[in-house]
Image (cartoon, rainbow, N blue to C red; front, top):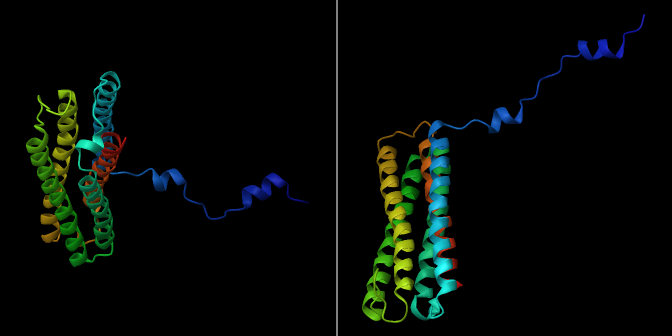
Length: 212
C-alpha cells in the first residue's frame, strides 16, 4: 500500500549539484608549476630575511635604517609596485572580456611600473654608494654587513622584478599577436601569480629593511 521512506528517496531524481572540488580544484599545469616555484622562492627570501635579522640582532653598532636609506623614495617604489599589481589584474579582466585594446594597455602600464621601479632602485644604489660608500663589502657609516645584506636582499628582489618585466613583455607580444582574443587568459594569470608574489615580497622587504 504505502511507499517506504527509503523508496521515496530512491524515486526522487533531483538535479545534481556540482561538487565544489570539481569547480575549484581545476588548475592548469602551468599554474601548479608556478605555485611550486613560488613556494621554493619564498623560502629563499625567508632565509635572506632571517639572516638579516640575525646579523642585526648580534651587531650592536647596526645603524638605524631610516638614517641611511631613503624612506620616502622606497615608499614611492612600493606604491608603484602596488599599482602595477592592480593594472595587471585589470589587464586580465580586460582579456577575459575579450577587450584586446584594454588588455594591451594595462599590460603596458604594468611593465612600465616594473621598469620605473628598477630605475628608482638604480638611482637609490647610486646615491648610497656615493653618499655612504656602500658596497657589498664596504660601508663607511657602520658594519659592512649592513650594506652587504641590503644589496643582496634588494638586489635579488630587483632581479625578480627584471625577470617579471621581461616575462610580461613576452605576454604583451603574444597579446599583440592575438593569442588571448578568445578570452582564455590562463597565461596572463600565471604571469600574474609571479608578479603579485614579487610585489608581496617587496612589501616584506620594505617593512623589515627600511621601517623596522
